[in-house]
Image 1 (cartoon, rainbow, N blue to C red):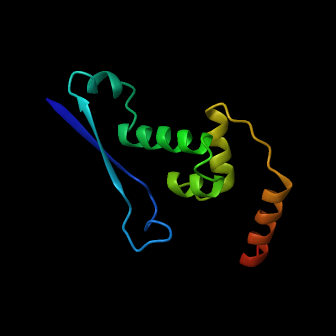
Image 2 (cartoon, rainbow, N blue to C red):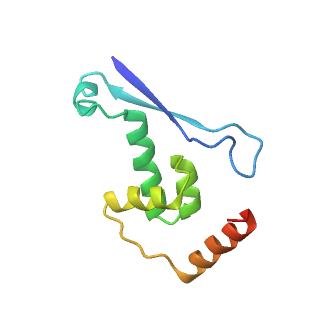
Amino acid sequence: MITSVTMRDLTRKRPGTSLPPMNVTLSIPDDLVPRLSAGGDDLSRRALEALAVEEYQAGRLTRPELRRLLGFSTRPELDGFLKRRGFDESITIAEFERDRQDLDRLGI
């Protein structure tokens, strides 16, 4: 028997489209499910995080897109997530300037 785990991104709609978020279903053999979930972690969340990090490393996601996909509301949340996974990236001047402009636009 195969157990299915469904993961979905946390955005309201797919950017640039009127389509709803995409759902992805993974089929995991039943005998592997207990070992994969032994730590009590949410398998769908772990799968989403693994996919998101891989796509970010490959350059197919920007930091803001990665943050949105993972449902983090702030950049420090994303920074902590990436740091726990061995990423230690310094912010570029361009990113700093974009963040400053975003904060100005929001009146913060």
